[in-house]
Image: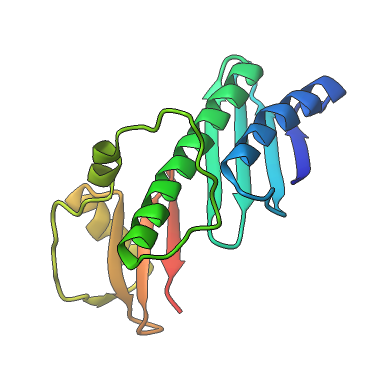
Length: 183
């Protein structure tokens, strides 16, 4: 894995770099071969002395991404590693289940002797518990945001009146809005 560690409002010291590489490299044990991937790590320190750690690992079959805000940057890095391990285990369980159902062999992940989290819990995370269908009304972005806020939702699916394509507006963590346009 290639590490790209960037700091905002903080100097990335050799000690921090070594700690990040040591912790993130623990993820390699979940793969049969070490994936060729660029690990993007963004470390940010705010004025209130809180540290934000973001890690993104794009791979061919999977994109691992996690972020954590913590008082202690090293604790944040530990929590990020735990989150990424959970994502890998969840994906591994899902992939292995599909291969077992089809009778194939999975070569992406290794089988470790570590205790696995209960499969029932992971299956429930992916279970669809409610389904809705509705007609997508053509509207502009502003009207979609108003509809979303009126309904009290964090996102809203609509047909863009200008492009006649399906779009999604969503509320970001910073309180602003984002737009996803389908191709």
